[in-house]
Amino acid sequence: PPDELARQAESVLREAGGAPGHIFNLGHGIWPQTDPDALARLVDIVHDRSARGGVHA
Image 1 (spheres, helix red, strand yellow):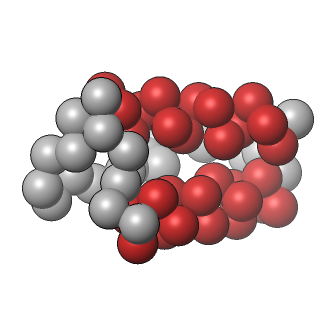
Image 2 (cartoon, rainbow, N blue to C red; image 1 turned 90 degrees about the vertical axis):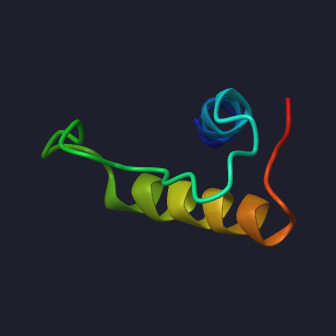
């Protein structure tokens, strides 16, 4: 669900602790059956948080 996607993305960003240059890597953990729209939402969430200075612990 979109809300859970946002919560999980925020959690990863918090764990990074606002480290400069942190790369939110989608990596090789994306399964072929993953909804491309969900990935687009994830990228949008990360870009939005980055534009606003990220999420800090």
